[in-house]
Length: 453
Length: 72
Image (cartoon, rainbow over all chains, first blue to last red; front, side, top):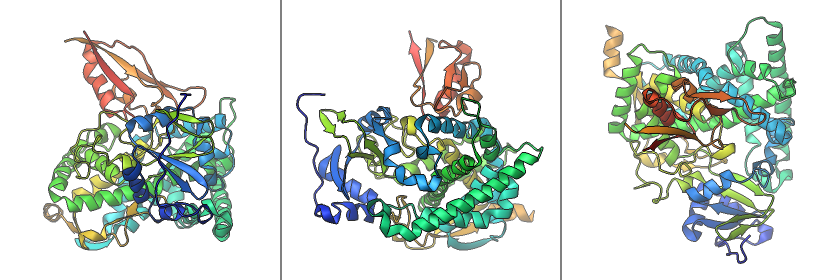
């Protein structure tokens, strides 16, 4: 450690400690609060999160230092213990570190490129089913629409078609109950959220029952399936043992939580930005048409090469990153450029702030899907980075690509409300478009002609 | 054309296997004792004829794990 350490600037406007410091302002809109903290203090900004002092670290160099730090000394596990009742004991941060690392390997195997070749047609079919009843034109709330669609695509890819078509409603409702208990409010005062936590525990238990039934049925069936459930059922730990049914349930909830709302929000923002930028939408649609009309299967090799659609989605993830409070607990003093973040404090990284740095992104406030990837990979961090980077990142991009390939080939979209309606809100820890997120759709003139021919 | 070598940042690799699909001649993904599967290079100095496929593996890696380095 260096002999002299510099003081980390403290963000203004904290309430007295007994009133939670910055907690209330943080909860009102975490991304906006963190942007204010950065604008006021720079690369490092300390604030009081209801008794836990937290240091926001901004910029590719700072991100890389955190992502490359020893996972035990700068710990995600310690920071995210509040998720353990949701995923369940025995998985992720509710399991010993060496077990969790092996579970990550299992997720990774289920999300490998060759497996995703199987998921892409499922997502395409779900999207086709979704638009079947749309008719030639109409309008509705696409935030709700994408949340509903992605729970169907996720359960279908995860648990197979039988589960998807028989149990989605109950699954969705239980999953919603779990989600309702996962906001920042409970971090400060768990007692205040007692009722939501009791509902959460009941929902978690019922989910485990449903998944157990499914696992037992699958075990008595001779058919090999290609879904993630099968991957989890076949996976083995280093000692040869398999996941218990309870662990399998945990793996499924973990996957859903990481991927559902984040993907739904990204899809909603993608649609809003397509409607805001018709000239850019045309270029993306031309690419989609080329693929859809080539007769090529939706496999990963084809999807990876859809560079305009990919650029559009990635620019959405830059401007509207869903997760903006990537947190670590400092277990051993962490030194960075002559500053020390002491043991017991949290470190937070915020993609929303990071992605607005002019030093990383020229003309950062302009939506430009053609911008090149930043030179430093730690500048663009919608999925985090390093060992803890979201393992579903390729699946997320795949899912949104397939959805928009189907949608844009058939329909064009425009905003139904005034532009100011599509604001960035954070009622939970996820950044999303404000209610209502209504868009109008109209069948493309050339598609109407094609259907009539 | 100058020769080239391939480098992998193992910290960033999560074993997505895109590189294996793009260029199985050079890349494979192997299980580790704990944590993510990781890419392993079959050759750090691949054949010149594979340059295009290696470049695709570099470009499409979801974690920007692989670097192609020109050597004089």
